[in-house]
Length: 412
Image (cartoon, rainbow, N blue to C red; front, side, top):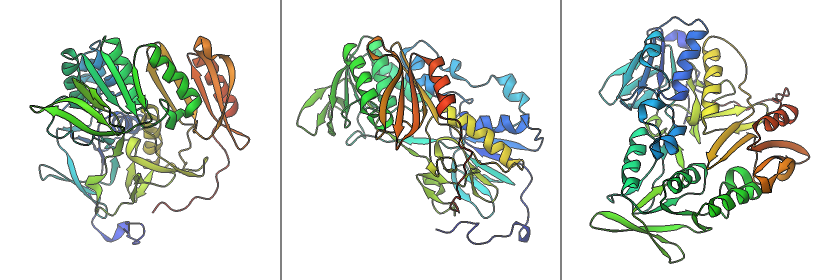
């Protein structure tokens, strides 16, 4: 697939679209881009388009505070109505982008509206992956939106037995929340420990022990074969090893895909997300930000796509600067956190499963420690477990953004 840049499009040979910036996706990444543009002095037209008919909201609380009932959805709002009004942006909510013309920098929505602008920012996030056989069965859930969280919360209120499928961050958080509600929880995953793919088996093993201590039944190292249902509602999960787990509610937390299906045929480079250069630019006048953006990280000398709130906000600042003429690569130290039971886990850098893990401070038995990840003689990650200050200090010592910027391949 050829992009605009590959075809050598000259912006001066076609009529210029109306001046302005249209951002597709109004969650943390999209809203933060709009706010950063205004802070940096941009006074042109600004539009935010989003498929959900809700004011922009935060997603991390969905699997914890909203799911448990501690928060109502309005508390997740990123900004109040007055703050949004002060942004002086047109909010087009409840309208889904269905196609994009990269050559003319225009977006068509499900209402037939066509929005053309000088600059487009793609911030459409993720689409959750489902489980085999879940279609048409009540009681099987995914968790990505406020509506998902509320539907799952209603079902949990009437449930006794819950099966969570997926041993990653989201699955572990949902399992912890459900146990906090007093439910019988079984967590199923293909990995041998929780979060093995993100944090490796050493730290993943500590988290696995914590869940077991809290009463979560663990079925790790196995796959789900199918859902079992009766009368249109789920009542069990059949595993690949032949075991059937009884369930009133099943939650699929088996991963997500970048929400880029609507961009097929657009002329943009698509792989694991919208592929961009180190300035987060996918084509002339078109940028990608947040969960859907696969950008070239010059400090790591490879392409990276991160699914977390911190990156969404940080990358938004870089995109706003690039739109306004800055020529700086986006080279952050990756960071994410997760709260489960009384544990706050904060991971800096790239704590890959292949790295060697050593204890820098604290004691694993006390569930207060800092671990360092080392690979090929170089520190690649720092993880704090209930030791945020110490983890930050070690991050500053070992993981400062690289000043070395090796030549990058063209993203277009």
